[in-house]
Length: 385
Image 1 (tube, rainbow, N blue to C red):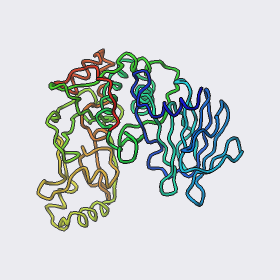
Image 2 (image 1 turned 90 degrees about the horizontal axis):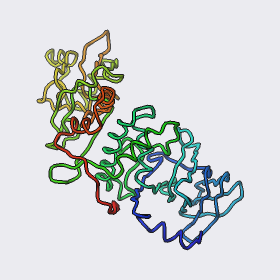
Image 3 (image 1 turned 45 degrees about the vertical axis):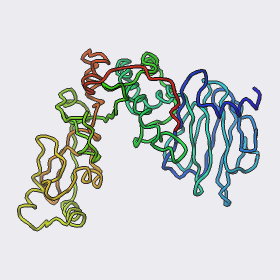
């Protein structure tokens, strides 16, 4: 392959009409050392000055941040030089690389697509530029698991594709579209399972997204389990989206993550309420409410709206699985008895999975969770802003 062609390709947002997306991987991890092996196919490595080396199948390139905050580059143990940045271009769509870092708690990951690697504040910044449907393979495996029916993966493919397009500006100031964490959509690299269900789910819904009645992309959200009642957006993010009204969901109430419990020392709860919200915890009435809080239906505030204690703050501070919980005192602890896992807005994944098991189609599932929407092909245009 002509090395000048490489420069042309990395500047192109598309290749034969296919849309790409830039994803910040290992986001939020302070990566100072990284080894990259070419597992399948070959790869070219470029710096800002031009071509550096070929990374052939089986070879390893090692990157380390040195004391001058430059990227120290070695190939199979041989020093190649230092650079502020480098570009990795895989020559075929089926090629992929493995990434491993001693600075990360994650196991080895494998990725398709191209990479732009630079440094910021003494750590590596790693951006994966990948075809959107190849990205979705990793998202579906990470967000939903790998042993589900094709029909469910059709559901997840459509909402994850819509979500990616809706949020393409989320990290634009950092040089990429989305990160690989649950802050965006979990994306832990290439799916390599034996089942073809994920691939079939993506291929059979290729290019399909959810639109509202005005033909605008619908603002999709999803979480693992809503606990039997969905949340409204202002209960979670202080932003009201009229399309989301709280509703009962009977499909998820007997699933794996429908219920949870967590014991927290009472003194920790009382101290948090007193210091953060200046609650008079010595008041007999308030003390009673703290250990007898009930939610027959989802609420927005703890104890009473008058005190202005958002349930989302309680969840975040104490690491609870959801905001949908009751409390009771058990010895010197408060038992939080909760329902669901996640924010509870939009599609309930375990509810949708259960619907599929009951022979609902993917179209019926989407209509149930996103009332008033329609499935449509999106126009192939750039998502880079």
